[in-house]
Length: 184
Ligand code: FES
Ligand code: FES
Image 1 (cartoon, protein in one colour):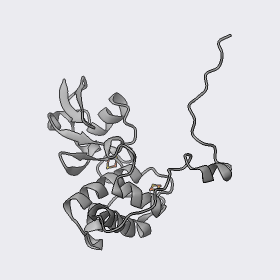
Image 2 (cartoon, rainbow, N blue to C red):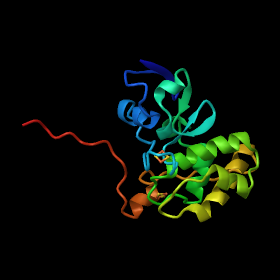
Image 3 (spheres, protein in one colour):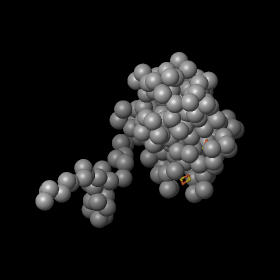
């Protein structure tokens, strides 16, 4: 049994201690916001916060982080309004979205540690792979997130896709709970 705290909840994993954290999070905790791209520590899609550090969770065995505090994208901000999330939404950074949770977690750790990160610091911390090519917008979005975090600026709230009345006007169906078919 491996104990740790995940998103402020005490967790005991009845898994082999060699299990990579990314798989424990997704398969045992159903925290599927953490993505798995390469499983070799290259792409960054699986990045989570472990004890305040941005860590590629496919490279870490759960047995090696017993007692740690882990935060995933689901636990970053209750209303999905962390400064990084605000800045990414405002700049429309995301394309397919696969790499975004790992990028957001890495950026969140960066702006907590560095009040005003320059381009070099951002590129060093965000060496993630993105097959959609969001990198040109990334540096500006992270700098803006740092600015929001410092309280130097605010952004107008932007609703995630599917929750905005303007999406409905464009014919994008709103997210609704699945309806249950009557039993025959
Ligand atoms: S899945 Fe972990 S770094 Fe790619
Ligand atoms: S937004 Fe598609 S992989 Fe990055």
